[in-house]
Length: 572
Image (cartoon, rainbow, N blue to C red; front, side, top):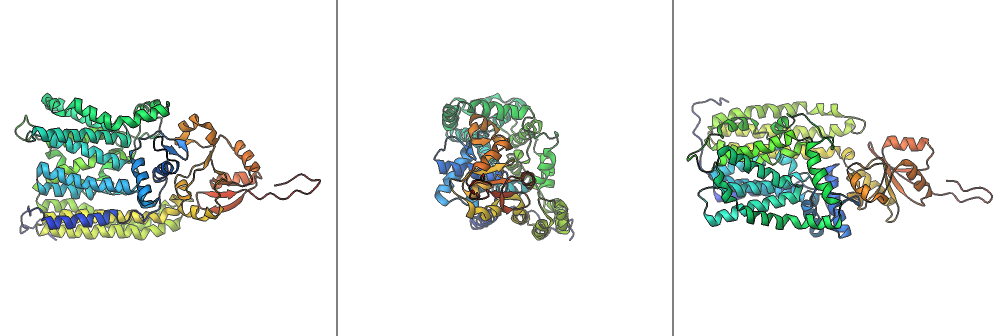
C-alpha cells in the first residue's frame, strides 16, 4: 500500500451523527466492562483494595480503614467507600472490586469528549476520547483495582472546570459553576489519594500565571468560596478520623506525603528518567502522534492576553510529570493523570493532520504488533520456580491473540488513511488497542495460580473454622483474606502494616518463637507460609499437616493430639 499516494482523498472533517456516536459509546461500554470478572484478583494491590472495603462492610466501621484488621492510614477512603457500597448493593465479587476504577475510567473518556468538544469542536472531542480510551496505560489501569484511575478522573474533572471556567467566552454565572466544579474535583481527588489532589492543580495554576504573567486569572478562581467548598467536602473525614485516631495526622500528612516525596523511606527510588519509557508505553499506540503534537501546542493563539487552553494543558502535563520525576518514591501508575490532558492536545492535532501523515504514525505500531505475535513464545523465558513454564505457555496464545488483534486493527486503520477517512482510522486504532489490551489482560489470568490466592483459597475452605486461628507466617498473601472472607494473624511480618501494629501490637506475633508456642498450644489452627519457611519448621520438628500447596504458598493445619497413655506424658 502506497501511503504517499497523491490520489488519497482529503481529510474527512465531518463529526459523527448522534446515532453513530451512541452506537460507538455502547460498543465501548461492552468492551470496557465486559471482562471485569474474568480475571482472579492479583497481589498485592487488588487484594489490598478488595479487602479494606470488605472489612468496612463486615465491621460496620467506615471511618477507620483497616487492612487485615489493622489500622491502615496510607490512603484516604473514597474508593474504599465506593467499593464497600458496591459490595452492599451488588455483592462481593471480583467485578465489584474493579467496578470503581472501571466506572471512573469510562466516565473519564466521556468527560474528555465533552471538554474537547467544548474547547476545540466536536471532531477534536471525538479524537481526544478515542486517544484516551485507546491508550494502553489508561486501558490497563481502568481494569485493575488500584486508586490511580479514581484520582485521575477527579483531577480530570478539576482540569475540565479550570479549562471551561477560565475562558473569556464563559459568562459570569457559568464561570462560577465551572470553577466550583474544579474545587469539588480537587476535594474528591484529595479524598481519593491525598494532597496531590490540591498540590498538583495548584502548582499548574501558579506556573501558568507566572509564565503568562496573567495575574487577572486569580480573580476568576473564586478562591474564598472554592476553598470553603473544598473543605466542606474533604475535611469532615480527615477531622473525624483524627479525633478517633490521634496518630493519624502525623502518619498520613508527614510520613505518607512529605517523607514519601523527600526521602527514600518507601524504597521506591528510581532514576530521574524513569517515567519517560513509562509514558511511551502508556500512550501507545499514539506515541508518534504525541511526539508530533507537543512541539506544535506551545504557540500562543490570539488574542495573546486571553486564556490559552493548549498552553494550560501542556503545563498540566509537564508539572505532573516533573513532580513525580523528582520524587523519591516512584511507581509506574503515578503519571496516569497526564494522559487525559495529552489526549485533548492530540485530539486537536488530529483534526489538523492529513491521513497520509497519520499513516506514518501507525507503521511502527504495526511492527510492534507483529513483533508481539512472533515473539510471544519467548515469554516462557520469564518462568521461575514460583511461576513455572506451564503457566507462561498458557499465556502465549493470549499474547498472540493480542498482537494479532492490534496488527489487524492497524492494517484497517492504514487502509482508512489511504482512502482519506481519518475518523475511521482513529476509531480503528482505538478499537484495536482496546481489544488487544483487554486480551493481554485476560490472558494474564493464565498466571493466576502464582499471582492470586483464588485457587488455594478454594482448596482450604473445608478446613476453615470461624473461631480457629489462622496464622500468616513470615509473609502476607494480599488476596487470601478477600477469598476466605476473614483476616489472618501476622507472624514476624509487618511490611505496610507496621505502623498500625505499633498502635495495636496485640494483633500479631512478633517472632517465630511466639508462633511455635501458640501453634503447639492450639487445639486447631491453620497457617500460611512460604515453602522455604515450611521446610525450616518441618526440619525443626514442628508438627503440622499440609492441606494445600502451590509454588508460592504452603498452608498447614495442626496435627490432632493423640490421647495420652496413663503413666506417660502426652505427645503431639
